[in-house]
Image 1: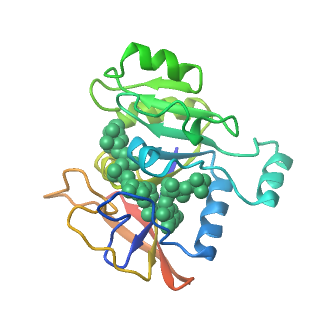
Image 2: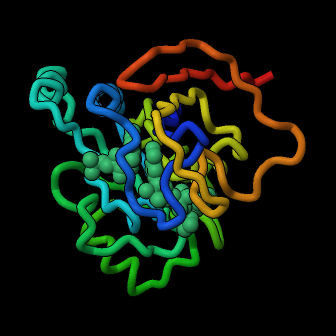
Length: 221
Ligand SMILES: NC(=O)c1ccc[n+]([C@@H]2O[C@H](COP(=O)([O-])OP(=O)(O)OC[C@H]3O[C@@H](n4cnc5c(N)ncnc54)[C@H](O)[C@@H]3O)[C@@H](O)[C@H]2O)c1
Ligand SMILES: Nc1nc(=O)c(N)c(NC[C@H](O)[C@H](O)[C@H](O)COP(=O)(O)O)[nH]1
């Protein structure tokens, strides 16, 4: 599986404010780029923190891109994936509507009653004891035919993916604003690395809207 992490950060590296509400950092051109990347992916993933904060739909917005996918004998929208250890995804979340297949990656810690409720709305993948074991969960997704997975965040999930060595490419739109705040989510949160920092190879720098898109490949030396 090829994993592309895509996110938008303020000039000071924040994905959102300390209130953890959705903030449009991207402009129209960057959102159009994100839509194209969704359209070329087999699935789009987020952590449950993002589901609870943003209630994202994660569908392809452009009619022509959806029509093109259908012409290519693919579903109109890519599948959606939520990494959600204890099954906190609300049953009325936008991501659980019928616009696309949704996989919920749970851990053994998810209570049985929640599993039963969520099983009616989504495909369940269980991997890991207290937290989702990302390596095993992604292997299961690959078995379902997901070859290119786009990850939209947030910072907790992105850090864990780097920690697990699962990221192939990182694309970051750096936008023209300062959010600040020591408790505001950044591109990679979690525990943070203290040694063996993942190394990146800069592949492209593209000016877009009033910011810049940085494309990095993960150096697996
Ligand atoms: N600017 C952007 O591009 C962008 C993109 C996505 C989210 N956001 C913002 O990020 C914030 C949400 O991010 P977040 O970091 O709080 O949550 P997140 O979306 O990264 O979800 C993290 C949660 O996923 C679950 N999880 C299960 N297994 C895990 C594992 N192995 N590793 C990590 N997490 C695991 C845990 O419950 C954890 O709390 C919101 O404010 C949202 O608006 C911004
Ligand atoms: N590329 C990007 N630029 C931003 O400025 C921003 N705030 C996000 N945030 C990502 C997050 O996952 C959002 O919740 C989904 O981008 C919403 O997706 P929908 O429109 O509901 O399909 N992503």
